[in-house]
Image (cartoon, rainbow, N blue to C red):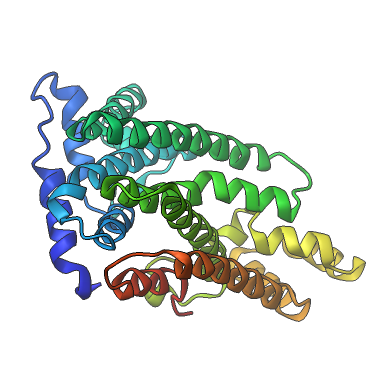
Length: 320
């Protein structure tokens, strides 16, 4: 990510200097706290790089980029409540540091600030940006509800799973890329390709994330692996196995579900490999990456696309 240091620093400074009111402190201190604990800032970076394809300066794209990061942070604050998560980015979550009611309200007002950031643009651009962010916000909520419903659904198909991650994760990346096009004032075809690039890239990213959670090395992935297996999370590995495994393999899976964590992780990983599930999921990840690249190749722009391509490769080709 050293290649993007200047842009990432600009995003960080813009967010840290955001003019949040000082009062009431119990509403805005949690927001300042959450923004300051950082993050990858991948989505705003995609907006800036997408706008640069058409010669738009970083100063011009920063408000739109910041809007997406503020919105993303709102979703994380609320996700942490629903997941009862104690830690985010190595720090206590907002509902743990304060309480649930404070976290709900702080998240709500953070979303409103995200839309406020779009007021930087002229009326025509504002309408395009706000319309897409409204659509994306609804879809993200739909995806989150689907994800929660999956916890109690006995059977989840691959198609249902892909639609869930498209809504919960990838539409926001599609929105991030399309924002760059809208800010640049380019025509609808280019914006469509930017959106399709980001959306399919987001699906490939999430499939890769599922694979890495099971088969990645903790020091490379940046977190302890095997959590999805321990929690019986219905990832693409899980849904594929339930659809394609033999009766004997499913029986072994059920037996492993009852054993201790390390044995469970090791045994289920072995099942995913010997049943062909891992290879299949890797193939699906490659398919969505290829779809993203086809959209990328169709983007007609006057400036070099190599930095946007490098970022795409970075998030979809993370090592095991």
